[in-house]
Image 1: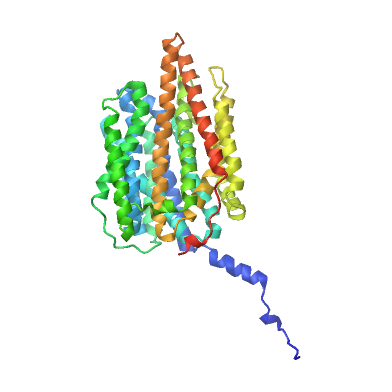
Image 2: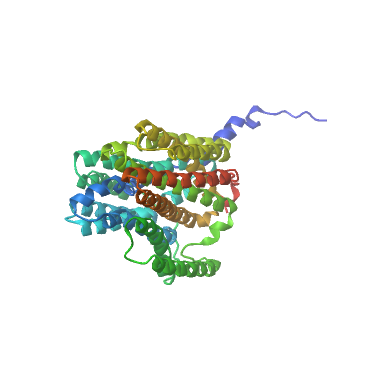
Length: 495
């Protein structure tokens, strides 16, 4: 037998292989700049979704509009988002990243400037619609970009940054609004955001590059009005349901419900036919991935809880505890900051350990925080609301990033844009559904209590307690779904 001499230079070096693997997974500097700009821009635009929750009572006085009209500043924003987001799957595939970013930020910036100088309610309402048109594009664009340029092993950490957008921005909206209202007036809610939006637009136009090849797919003209009527009708019905319980509705709820339902069924049928030839406006094959479907179920329950909390806690604090705008807005600040700090850590844990180690305890925290809110009354101290709210957001911080990463990671790469559009659409529908459900329960119970002789404050307290009880029950369902979420294999993301 001949001796074999193994030269040191020919021996495999484990550390070198590890460094090579890490290098292969690294995000290029060019793509990292794109992601950072998109995160900052998305944070700014999503922030505006909830700034009106504290400002509406002030605007009703200063602009001389009734509550039923004032609520449309939020309703129209959500409705526009619900209509535009389903179209983003097609837009992201057809329009280059840089061009789409510039269009989205231009719309948002224009809407913000119009809102700042709006002479009355009608112009302000139009400005909110223009803002929402740009906002709707940003989050799907951000998520699709991350899924396209970031390797599976690093997606958790990168998607952790998205929690800054999906949860922290809406959480900080009421805080920003409350501080501005107390010191500067409602116009400066938009006046302070406008310069930041302009800078983001200029920087993005300079540094953002297209991260994927655009296709020449033609838009299906029939799918567009079906999407507008279907998703728009659904969101309008859900939002109007909550408002009609409080102040009545000028349009019978069955009208948008029927129109939206028929259009939605037609839209789904149309997409199932078109996706056979890859021509769908919103490709529903994303739901063939079981983990994506589970993640969306959990996302719906989590978003219903989060947006319900956004609405009920400020309302209870102002109407029962008689807090001012600034003090009310500060209730969401600790939770929002915690989510921002926890986002990157949650992402790293996901990459190392998978989703269940995060989602299960996260959903337990959400449930604990909501159950704590079922016992609030006129004597509840501010610290109780702060702690309960912070616990809820700590749980959501551990839940949203794993859900988005595992859900989108289970979708084939060529469907990333459609998966991102579905995530964005579900967020709006779930937010509208959670708001409608909890506001309706609160209003009905409060009316019955006051009819029975209770004071208005006691009636609102009874209504809020009942609404949070419903939310707490939903949180139990969220826990049940959490146990089924798994980390997807890398394979679907690469073929």
